[in-house]
Length: 345
Length: 285
Image (cartoon, rainbow over all chains, first blue to last red; front, side, top):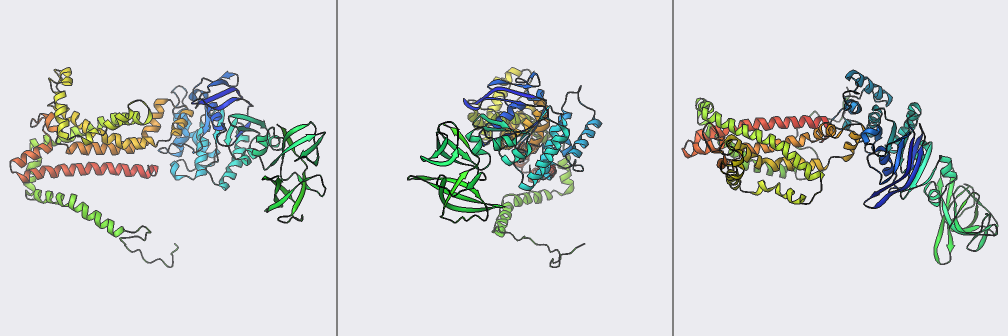
């Protein structure tokens, strides 16, 4: 099911939680809504589900305007962060709930419900646990019961709110891979909310980066990491350093001095670069600073460098250096970014 | 089977090793306290009753007046507790779910039956529900006061806070997400309440029922003003006990008390069993 979100605005007590958000989700796509807390990602997910209603704007499911459809009419599968399982029901009763509450005309017969429940249990690899109560399951198992329960109603779209948020790291990783396979197998249009960029980049076809009630950028993992569209995206995703620079006559100046990299378009701006996109140089026109700390990071080393700032707090940057590079604490190091981006003021 | 080499044969021990000190002191205090307040009076009651012998006890038990009084006491308490379960849950729902002007006032009013002297409540209710009272006159020729129905009215008044105050905190802790989950699965509001919310509240409601019922069975002060106290019709067992005492028939009075004690204990025990069974199924509800 294709979902189109047109100019959605949502206010809570006059405070805008979402501000003019538009998004097109293709059928069968796996989309991540990524952002820090308070960025409006969960609000957007709840609006798609019909658990909240927008102040203005429209939501289309296919060609159908669903903006005023109730949550029951929308037929979406929603998996809550804390699972929200019915704890007085067994696993099987939880999963079958959505079928059992259907009006008599469209309710499948009991045997059919039982068959579907065991099919779903198979799919989420929990066969044999149908008689258990939720409090007798581990976190990962509960998560999968919640997913099976959401899938039982044959939803038009699957929505997951921080699906792995409450699980420990190892289970998280497993479930992440498992969800990807599950999605590829069932082909459901899926939207999930996360604040974990690694999760979003690894899992999603497209990542929607949000901040302060707005969409900052929509794109593949490569897009948002390699071609960030805004200063926020550059600093939110991955590691990065930033410095105020000025471009004059095609060269970049930092504190009035050329730093040996070319850039078109004159004017002041903010230079962003990632630690791994830096090379150490031995030239006068380069950035330079004092090494204040050195961290070993798997196959490389990260040097933290303070660049003096004329009496103010020094600029702090991080660069990746080869393991055998002659870096000493307190020594002065010269470097240039090899890949960078300047955001104009 | 694998045995732990160092395990000594299972030995019964009163105290398990614990980092929380004071077990002996607090257990000793609890036992002494319960003995003085509850166990010794109850033992005295049983001892007095024993003075009657089996045949005497049996005679009191099978006396028409005793049976009718017990029937009225337990019957009206049961009906009143049922009424309170329904309306007490509704009151708790309104107090937890909605914010409206005067909510705190209503919240405070709920506790009034706890504080009001029961005789005052009985006189007020009797005046209201009497055939010539404000409410009672509306129902004429159907009579409320001075019938078992009047007793139910008094017990509903007395028992209400027990249900509200046990259900309310549990209701406050209900997870909104669970209701939303039911809605996303297609359940309408009625199905959400009957299949998701109420089953979650059952243990609390059952506790509230047990408390209101137990309170109703023992209630004396408010009931005697509104009941009319007609033997075989609207005479409650506690009143019959007082009547026997006034006749200096102490053995007869304690015999009725013993019967009430046994019935109450059995009913409360059964409710506790149901609760324990509930807990085993759903974990710590």
